[in-house]
Structure formats: C-alpha cells, structure tokens
Length: 87
Image (cartoon, rainbow, N blue to C red):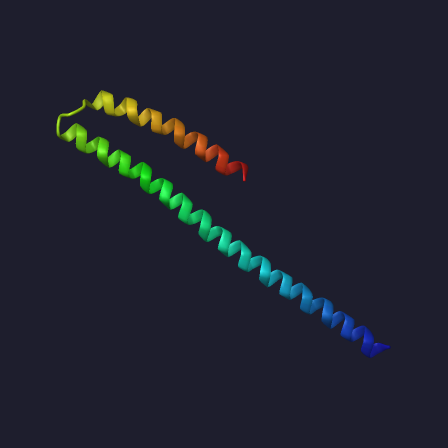
C-alpha cells in the first residue's frame, strides 16, 4: 500500500513537472513569435520615419507635411498598442 501511494505521488509529480516544462516551452515559442511580429511592425514604422526624413532633407515635403504624416502613424501605433495590451 505504501509503495502504491509513493508511485502515485511520483507519477503525479512527474506529470506536473512535464506539464510545467511544456507550458514554459509553449510560452517561449509564443514570446518569440510575438517578438518577431513586434519587431517587424516596429521596423516598418521606423522605415516610414526614415523615408519621411529623407523627403524632408531632399526638400520634397515640408516638415509640417511630415509631421502630419507622422501624426497619422501615431494614431495607428496607439491602436496597435491598445490591441496588444488586450492580449
């Protein structure tokens, strides 16, 4: 009887540890995926800012026009950030 109780406890502990390890593994994979997606979005936004800066430096658009375009991006960023916080 005592041996059976020990085996049940050992089995439960093994399953608990296995579940914990699987959860950690899934969390890491999801974190990497989210990190890549965030990096991609951030890279796109930064690329847009670089393009605007180049247009201003080349005299194609004014700083005011660039600010208007950046303001539009700020709103998109805020919406994205709020959506991200919901997850």
